[in-house]
Image (cartoon, rainbow, N blue to C red; front, side, top):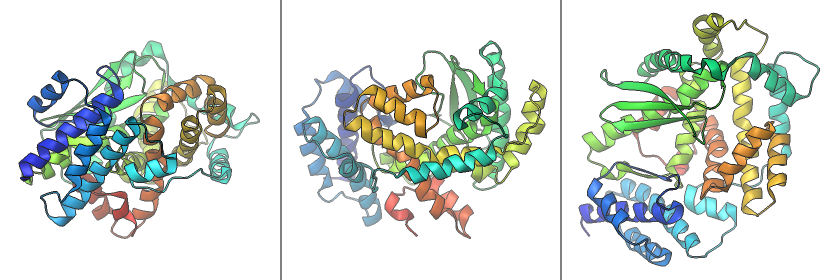
Amino acid sequence: MTPQEWLRGYALLALRVNRRLVGDEGATVLIYRGPQEWSAQVKAEEPAAPGRLADDAEALLDEPPFEPERARYLRAQVRALRTVARRLAGERLPLPEYAHQCLGIQAHWLPQEVFEEAHARLDRALPRGTGALTERLQAWQAAHTLPLERLDLLPALVDRAVAEARRRTAALVPLPDDEVVDCRLRHGAHFLAAGHYAGERRSTIFINGDLPFNLADLLYVVTHEGHPGHIAESMLKELVLVEEQGRLDQQVRFMLGPSFVISEGLGLHAQDIAFPGDEAQAWLTDNVLAEHGMTPDSSDFAAIHRARNALFGAWANAGFLAAEGRPDHEVTGYLSRWALMSDAEAAAALGSLRAPGMELYTLGYYHGWRLLNTWLDSPDRTTRVRRLLTEQLLPSDLKS
C-alpha cells in the first residue's frame, strides 16, 4: 500500500466511523479538512457495517508506510477508530479499558479526596462568605456576569482578549501576521464556547448567545478556545505538519483518539501558559471589569480556575456513571455535589454525557490536564509548549 493509498483509506475510515456513530445530523466527533471528494463519497454511500469498519482498521494497522515515529502515532489513531467500530458492532468493554484503547490513558474512578482538595482550594480563593461553597461560587460568577441583554458587547471584548492572548502566545511560538480571528454569538448551541479553525489562517470563536457570560472567565475561555489553545494548535499544526511537511493525516482528527487528550489538557492549561500567576486577573481588572462596573474583590481568579480544572474529574466520574446506565438524577446529583454545578448546569452536562462517545471524550479533560500538569512543570516549559502546538504527540510521549 502506497502512502497516498494508506492516507485515503485512513480518511475514509474516519469519515465512515464518524457517520456511523453520530449519523448525518448529529454533532461530529471528527475534524476533517482533507479532500472534499472523499467526504462526498462517504456521504453518498450507505452507512458501512461496523464489522467492516473494524476490518478496514485492521488492514491499516498492518505496517503503515511511514517512518517509525509517524507510524506509531498513526497506529494509535487507527486503534481508536477500530475500538469505536468494534463497539458499534456490539463489543462492550468496561470504560477504563475502552478509554485505554481509544485515548491511550489509564482512567479509573477518582476518589472523592481529589474533589475535596479542589473544594478546599476554591474555598480559599473565593470571597469570604457564610453560604455553601456552591452558593459562594455562584455568587462570584453572578458578580462578574454580563447579562443576556448586554451580550451584544461580548464579541468586541473577545476581540480585545484575543489580541492580548495572541500577543503573549507569539512570544512563545511564531504566529502568522495575517491571521484573523473573529467572534460570533451562536444561538441554540449546546456549548458555552468553541474555537474553529477554518483554514487559510482564519478562525472563529463561537460563544453561546443564549447564556449570560462570566467576564472573570473571559481569558480562561479565549485562551482555551483560541491562543495558545485549540485555534493556535489547529492552525500551527496545519502550517507546520501539512503545508511544510506534507503530513496530510493531520487533516483527519478523530476526537475520540489520543491526540485530543493532549488538546484538551492544553486548553485547560492555556490561561496559565499565556497569563501566569495573577496576570489574567490583573489584565481583566484593568481592561474589562472596571468599564462594566465590576469592582475588585478578594477572589483569586487563577486559583478558582485551577480548582475548577480539577473538578473536571467529577465530570470524568459522571462519565463512568453514565456508562453504567445510572439514572439521570444520580448523574446530575453527583455533578451538583462534586462539580458544584447548578441544576441547569448539571442538566446540560448530562446532555453532553449522553451524546454518542461523550462519556469517553469527557475523560480527556481531567486526564489531559493532570498529564500536562506534570509534563509542563519543567525548566524547558516554553520548548514543551511549542512541541504541544507543532508536533504530533501521544499521551505516552508526555511521561517524562
